[in-house]
Image 1 (cartoon, rainbow, N blue to C red):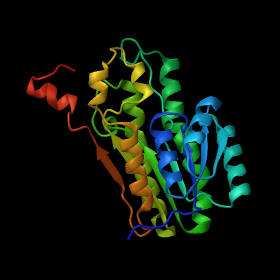
Image 2 (image 1 turned 120 degrees about the vertical axis):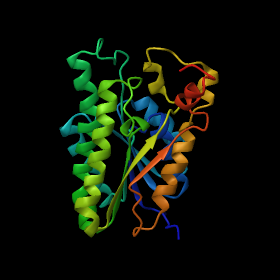
Image 3 (image 1 turned 90 degrees about the vertical axis):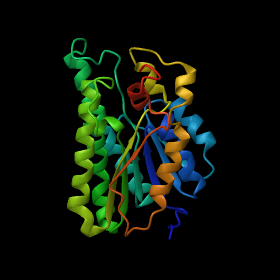
Image 4 (image 1 turned 180 degrees about the vertical axis):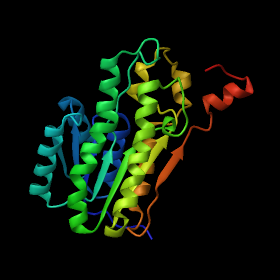
Length: 252
């Protein structure tokens, strides 16, 4: 049986675009009060305008511990609870190959994609533990399970680490009603693709997963009853470019 999300509290990081924006919209349609966080105020305002229910904008750079702690305290003070955390914030870089990446770019990706998500999870777990209920959805990647030079050394490493971190939450807190899911999509037509060294065509993007597909998946996860833990979901486009390349039909 699906659970009602009416007036429950969701915090969506990276809510200004792509998967995060669509997750916020879908959860709002299900009656949740949604906290929208990200670094770009104008993008968050756009997401807010598309949400059907009450929503609240919080500027937050998850790569900074102090920013995450500040926002978490504000949310707890204002709403007393965080029922669902959806971690959509994530970055990649253009110079991602071993021959082109430098130490600063490595640090930037790791600091956001794994340290930042750790800060968010760490900050909400005590609140969820106190309420004996909570769901954490960490948006990972196909690259979290499949090593790929295409995604780059830093991004691929960060997503493998994120999958491991997510499962340790289940191992540690399953006895207090906390569930965590690593959502691992293949290629999604979001702005992060613009960082690809080789630019993609509109035709290629249209065959990929769309942000709305992931929004629907996040809504599905969120409606599962609290006795159900979906540890990980891998989702890919039917026209999977790596598979197609193996058939010799289309080059990567």
